[in-house]
Length: 274
Image 1 (cartoon, one colour):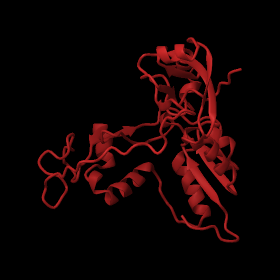
Image 2 (cartoon, rainbow, N blue to C red):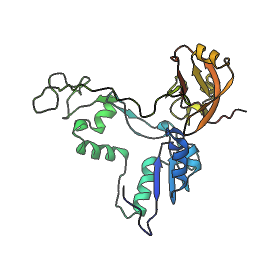
Image 3 (tube, rainbow, N blue to C red):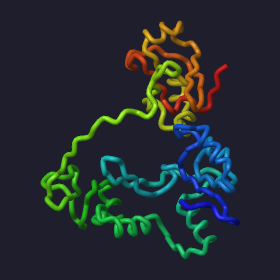
Image 4 (cartoon, rainbow, N blue to C red):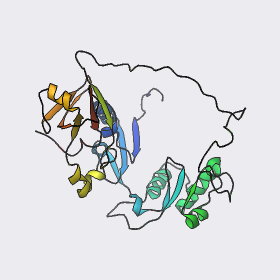
């Protein structure tokens, strides 16, 4: 990052992310995005972030394009186009290349396989995975350093990538949170995922079956805490912090420890209460 100089434009290009919804301090994120001179959002839906954009680039969803997908278990999988993008939506690579050309860059990728080949020549961990192999085997686990290697489903079996080849374990002290419960804000807010909805719900909230299973924004509160507050399941409760507040339906749930409230961060989109 550097200081903005006179004549410079404060811009951002967001692709497939929704920080206006997912950022822990949504008010701060939205104010910052709105303060940009130019915001470009490339996505498949009109997300909360896209609402703030100066330019929206309609992109393609995963069944609408060829490409590879890599999971956190290090499995590189082949994805194959099944349907065409709707309307004026375009392939991600096409969009990016058009922008590159406008910037004066000579990007001449004819197919996503050429991008993957460039990746594997700059990333030793996937150096042995060719596009042809992915097409034949459908999935390969990395590290896969040389062509023909089977790929390592388990890493660090014999050695660790250190000079000695041995791991080094370092004890760590528990560092308390900068902000602890107090008399004014006595409870702890825990956020996370739920089974039915993914991240900010930009896709799953548009799936009628999933939205029917978990249609409402909810706060999971321990039954005894809910009783102490004089509430009952189904009541509208307002959760307030030093940075903002949100109103949701209370759900009595013993999985939430006493003194804590769990809120799935995908459940507050596309629905208002009141």
